[in-house]
Length: 104
Image 1: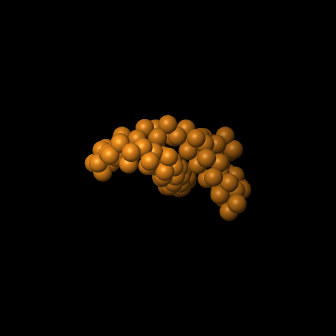
Image 2 (image 1 turned 180 degrees about the vertical axis):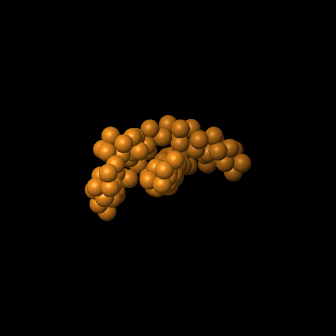
Image 3 (image 1 turned 120 degrees about the vertical axis):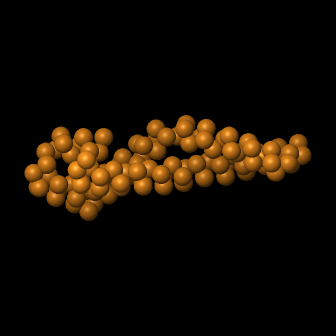
């Protein structure tokens, strides 16, 4: 793996984990706010609620992974373009097809 591949992969993976974490946290808070009344009405214990969310979070993370990959790809590509790293890469002799293979 070349240095450029590792650099872009590191940027992509850190952004992906961050975006996925943010979306999962937001969805979990929204779900908790919607179901809080039902939790108290049915007298559920904290352990039962925790067990529910321990099963809910991986399900939601798996469900939103495709949109998170799309958002991350757009975000990382725009950040590279904003810092003119794409232009420097193309000027350095790397073909556009090779560069796109890094991102995708």
